[in-house]
Amino acid sequence: MNKKLAAALSGGAVLVLALTGCGGDDTNEKLDAWAKQVCDAVQPQAAKIRSANAAIQKETSDNSTPDEVQKVDSKAFQDMSDAYKAIGAAVTKAGAPDVENGEKKQTDAVKELNGISASYASLKKQVDGLDTDDQAKFADGLKDIASELDKLSKSGSNALSALEEGEVGSAMSRQSSCQTATATAQATKS
Image (cartoon, rainbow, N blue to C red):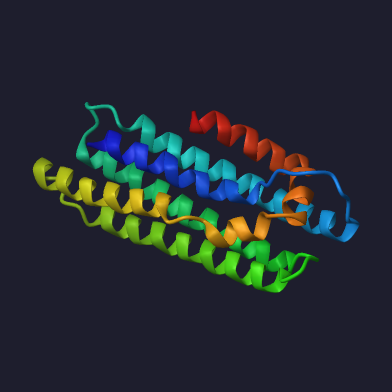
């Protein structure tokens, strides 16, 4: 059962990578400075999300007790919630990117990141409330959580995609900290 949870999770971690655009090399110093600020702030949070995913995947072995699974999942969901909130704060702090509709793109992305953070906080609450004394109930509860995770991983990152398209994506792709996050994510995805 926890394998389904791990599979759903690995999809969810990809959301953060919407902030690591790719593209051409038209330079805009103001936009490059914005991208550097955001990418530098995203890097440690992306690492935190990868680490939380790895912890859950490690705990998927069939010999883990419900107590162990609950403890690891709870901490991982909290870490993910904190990471997405921190990324939202970083985008807020960076201000609007110097592009057409930059302010709307920034606002939408922050709203989306905060929503993702709240979703992981809700999953943490759900996993904390599971009955670890009854293995069948616990497995059913995990199934519900895996289903929520699956929805979360599929609930596109439209605002993030909109934020990183065009010039912003190009500027982000020039930042080494965004390139590192993308490379690691691609390795995690496969």
